[in-house]
Amino acid sequence: MFGALIPFAVIAVIAYGIRASRRGGSTLTTGQQVRYFFQHLILLVAVLVTTAGLAGTIGPIVDRATFVATEANDTALNLAMLILGAPITALLSITTRRRLATDRTEIGSFGWSLFVTIGTVAPLIVAMFGGYRTLLFVVGTDSYDGAALAQLIVWTGTWLIVRRVDHATSLQSRIEFRHVVPALVGLVVAAVALGQLVSGLVQRILDATSDAVFVPTTSLLHRGLALFVVGATVWTIDWLRSLSRETNSDAWRFVVVLFGIAGGLITAIVSLATATYQVAVWLVGSPQADIARTHFEAFPEAIGGLVAGLLVWWYHRTLLADRRTELRTEIDRVYEHVMAAGGLLASAVGVVILVVAVVEAITGTRIIRGDTAVNTLLLSLILLAIGIPVWVTYWRASLHREAADERGSITRRVYVVTLLGVGGLVALGSAIATVYLLLRDVIEGNFATSTLRALRYPLAILLTSGAVSGYHVRVFRDDHLLTPTSHGRRRIVIAGPADARLDSALRAIPHLDVEWTTTSDGSWPVDDVVAAITKSRGDLVVVLGRSGVTIALI
Image (cartoon, rainbow, N blue to C red):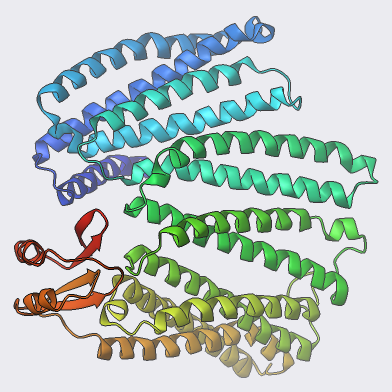
């Protein structure tokens, strides 16, 4: 049944890619886009098949121990992929190179973007697995695996070749999404490995006197070290040596703000909540296990996540602090609202669990199998203690910016409307469940304490979601009143030394709203700035720096 949907899915992907390419300024016709899509798709498949076949063929050769034991089917499959894939790859590569020598518009097609994106990310991930398995042999954890070594060498070569082709054929210098994916992969792998290393160290400290845990802890440390070397190597190549210098690009802020700062902080907060809950349950709650080692089994992982998250947050926060200006971008707004949403969600869950815990305490039953109301109350208090400060910190920062551009930004609108919509749907569903359970027991004549127990979840969710939706209805109404309609007006943000002559010249231009941010000393080339703004379109930010005047779209 699902197989019949594949052709429609392919058509949808092609249509979406063509539409995205046209939004990016591509001048290719629909026919050219479709033709290039399939040409580059075949080239991509040929490259991946050839690489897999070459790695599979070399693997048994560099590992004599498994050369004789290699299955005939595996050998035949690898040779078939290599024999058929290599000529096709060479032929398509030569024809593509000849076309690009005379017409480079092909690079702007969706098919080319698909080829260089998957052609760099897929080989990189496979090569990282091979490198990880090879390093396990180096540190003495696993036995020698020639297939892993061949996988590392061959797939790394493919990654470097496609990566070089991508950089050599780029039509523009700006960093695109596909350029940040390898850096993000390396960052995530290195952070996970760092957490694994810290977890192993904590486990070793906790069980220093136990021989039964010493051996697996050593293996855990070795695996964490191997994984960290792999992730840190990729992160160094793609971030420290290239992307980290692109401080003015949206891709840089995307990685630093959303993944580095927000991702690291969220990881640290979740890990802190987990560790705190385990300690609180052991001290004042009702542990499921009487043995400390069993109860704190997940404690080392929580500490590892806390340390890794804090280090990732600290590093990227330092980068942003060193390059922060008075100018805010939409990525900064996304960061604040994502953190506010996370804090609000944790607080809402804490309130729900608190109401449920009170009901369960009154009725004398348990909420979660194996947990008493005391444990659930502790979880609620921990979520509230962490969620409320996070939400208040980031939401207050947003509320204190009363400018119309802040309240009318797309990020704030999406945030408020999403909470209104989700909160409304959740409130409606929980209200239906509450009325249903209540009427069922009343009609059956079973209205008693058991009814209150049955209503604990939908009633708690109804009260919480109703409060969240009600508050954001007021926020939505205030934003709508304080955000004026533009009616075709343009917004110009001037960042630099105050200049009365430039201010008067700009305010004389019709349908122009001028905002000033004094950031430095200097002298404006008034005539050149006015001429540039007059010829341009859209909302602009104009910055006077050491290298001169920079004008960019907001």
